[in-house]
Length: 158
Image (cartoon, rainbow, N blue to C red; front, side):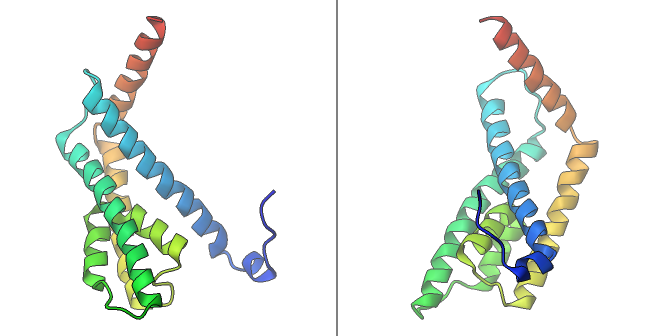
C-alpha cells in the first residue's frame, strides 16, 4: 500500500494529472527505446527515418535533461554557478521533455519559477501535437503491425 495523501493533495486536482503524466512520460521513453532497438536489430520493421530521428532525439535529450536537472538542483542547494535555463529549455524543446519532466518531479527543481514552467509546458504541448500527428498520419500503425507479425513469427518458430 502507498503512502497516505494529505488533505491538500486530495483537494489539488493536479496531483492525479502529474501522476498520470509521469506514467505517460516513462511509458513514452520506454516505448521509444524499445521500438528503436527492435527496428535496428530486426529486419522488416518499417520505421520512417524522420520518426526514428525524433525518437532517438527524445531518448538522448531526455537522458541529458534528466541529468542536467539533477546537477542544477544540486548546484542550487550548494549555491554554486547554475546551468543556464536556455540550455534546459533547449533540451526539452529538442525532444527531451520526458526526461526534463521526470527530473523536475524527482528533484523538485524549478517548481516555483512560473515563466520557466510556461515555456516548458508550451514545448510539451508542441511535442504532444507532433506525437499525435505521427500516431495518426505517420507510419506508426505499419510499424506496430510489423512488430506484432515478427513476434508471432518468432514465437511460432519455437
